[in-house]
Length: 282
Image (tube, rainbow, N blue to C red; front, top):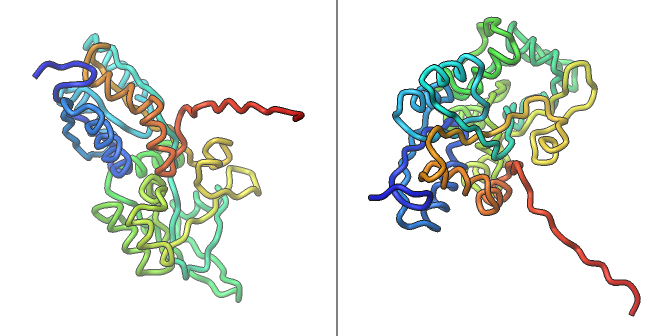
């Protein structure tokens, strides 16, 4: 089968936190271009980058750009790697609906991750809060450890399960635990996972460093850059312009792909302008 921007076969590795969105993008792309066949590989961001570097795939979708070390490695093999920003998501904090905790400051989140943390309910009762990560070595864990804690160790009261869905299900059944997950898992209000947990879990509002303004993850807080843990989603490819990898990248970054993100609750990287003509008088 010839490989062109709208036909052929393509392997796409992507961050597990973006699973629902990548599935929908691939489904929509293949529906438009019936001669294109994409194979999805759900991994963490580091594995996705490694797969691209080792020629296991030609395109990846992750919630960050390549770091300096990775860019240098690709350059050493004379690869031209092209990152394209396609959406914005964020690291979300969720807890059981009955947990006596509604918001956390940046400083409290640092304490939550690095030492035993106790919160007070409305009756001044102390409650120990445990931490749960979405998946071992996930991009969320990498982000918290590298960007937030700058390499510091997580507290002993931090634990991890095998997937985001397991973490969501655990929080839905157990109070006094805060889970760090990719907002993309719960961004789509029409998705079955979100619907099943609407009355069981809640988001925790968080603030930026040295701020008293608390925000929830949402399209508007991503757009205004008021949510502290906002992350940019990239499609990264290394092949030429006339390839299926380029076709998929262009689709996701184009009007149809951007609309898919918008409908599923993430902030598209580009939004279509609307021309409104106002007529006055009779």
